[in-house]
Each structure stands twice: as structure tokens, then as C-alpha cells.
Amino acid sequence: MFVKNCWHVAAWDHEIVEDKPFSRTIAGEAIVFWRTAERRIVAIRDRCVHRGAPLSMGRLEGDHIRCRYHGLAFDPDGRCVDIPSQSTIPDRARVQSYAVEVAHRWVWIWMGDPDLADRSLIPRTPWLDHPDWRCQPDYIRYDTSYLLIADNLLDFSHLPFLHPTSLGGSPDYAAVLPSIERIPGGVRLTKWVRGTAPPAYSAKFGGVGPDGLVDRWMFYEFLAPGILLMDSGMRPSGGEPNCAGEIAFRGCQALTAETIESTHYFFAHCHNFGIDDPSVTAEIHQGILTAFAEDQDMITAQQRNLALDPGFKMMPLAVDAALQQFRAIISKLLTEEAAS
Image (cartoon, rainbow, N blue to C red):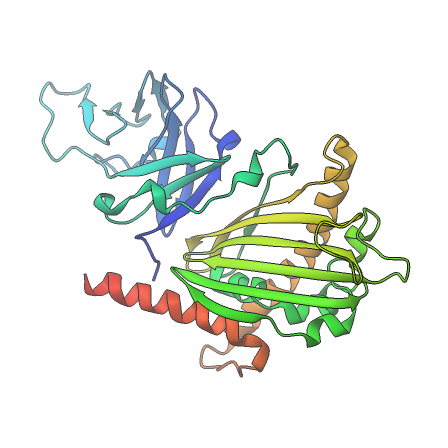
């Protein structure tokens, strides 16, 4: 159902504030997060052992969280430390706790075997808070499976058709298929299109030659369970690397399954130009939001359509190679976890 022995993005670090519990459902499990007195973020199952009430409706008392229904208090490891109505605390008065790490503004949570929660496995996203890059962090909730969104992100061919005035560029961009290779835990896509029309959302910022054309690159790493790290940009057609006018982006996107049919989508589109002008960041972000709204409309309609006929089988095309490989990786991980 869900791959759990991996790091999932649970939140932006600014979402979890002091003195207030924060609840989010991840991979079908309701989880409550809070900050300790030292501002460390911790997470336990958002369900009191007594009557199943959401602990996120309770209050924080120092490093502990107290249920607002009958007053049981729990520590960051999920152990019950106080039951107001009795003096003894049963050994089984404990809720599940989770490994949590914060890296470059993202709060990561390990949903599986805690003994396997290796911090070194967290994908690197240094552009999110690097002084030479700027971005505007954001979040969208989808009422669709995360796999349909992953399909969309791994498919470059839809850009000129679904996003003709935003990300798309010209139809010749869709005709160039990316090279695809397997990497540990995911796939890498590499795509160069030379002498093509620039996408409208970025053309005004640079990268366009005298002939109005650009050489455009897009390198993807798409990692399980749904982490997209994108190196993209453009330069004047025929130019050399790092030539005058070249502009670059680093897209950091994370799909985190909420349920089978809903998804948390965290994203930021980092740029290395105009970093002292907040209006540049705002305009780039608005362009991304416009394109993502187009994606969301289509994917949500696709989900509704597929629900009408659960037996429908999608017909793969040559452009679907990357998404098919990613789905195979997810299927393999699910099989391995079920076996263990």
C-alpha cells in the first residue's frame, strides 16, 4: 500500500510552531508533531491509548503532550507519563513514536522500521536555504493518488499541451525523449533540447539568444517514495556552459501519500538570479502555481475518470518509460517490505 522504510517529507519547518501541536496524516497514519523546549521537533501517533482521541486536540506541557479528553500525558517517545485518574501507569500505555529529522527547511519522518532510519539516506536539498539561491516554499493538497502525480512529473511530453503559456515551450520540446537510467532508489532523467522556444514564465529573466531561441536542459532525479530533485535552465542557443544570460533553477518537490486517494505536495522552485529582488521570486512562484493548477485540474479529473472504471488499463506510450520504471521501483519496494 505505502512504502514506509524511507524518509517522507512531513512538513515545512515553519509549519510546526512552538506551543501548538501540529497534526498531519501520512501514509494512512495520523501523526502529531510538536516542538520540545529546545525546539526539537518530535512526532508520535495522534491517538491516545485510552479512548483513541486525537492528541493534537490536547495541550503541550513542556516536552509533553496532554490529551484533552481524559488528561493522559505522553512524552516525546510516546510513553504515558501521567494518568490523572489513577496512580499506576500500565506498561502498554504507549503510542508509537517516529524518527524525525529537519534538513534544509523540510521536516522528514521515517514511517517504517525505526532501526533502519538512517539520516544519511535523506535526499539533499541545499538550495532550499542556500544564500546563493532564493525560493518561496509552498504546499498543495491533492485529492488523488500520489502515483498519478508522480506519473505527471515524470512525463515531459505533456508540457507543451497542458502548459502552453506557462512551462511548455514549443511542441518540438515534447518530441525529444529524455535518456533514463536507474539509480539507487529511483530514476534519473536527462533531457537537452537545443534551438527551441523558451517557456514564457522564464524567458523574461534571461537565457534567450538574439534569435529568440534557447538551449534548454532538464535533469531529474526522482526518488522513492516521491522526491523530485530537478536541475533545469536555459542559455542562449549555441552558447557555452555558464555563458552570459544563462539562468538556472533547482526544483525541490516532494509527494507524500496522505491516504490511498490523497497526497501532500511540498514544493519550491529555487533560482540563482535576481536573488536580491523579492519580486523575481514572487513572479517565478506565481508562474509555477499557474502550471501546477493546470496539472491539478487534469490529474483530479483523471482520478475521477479512472474511479468510474477500476478495470481500465492504461495504454503505455514510448514517452511513459520513466514513469513505468518508477512504478516498478515502488512495486518492488512494497513487495520487499511485505516479505520482511
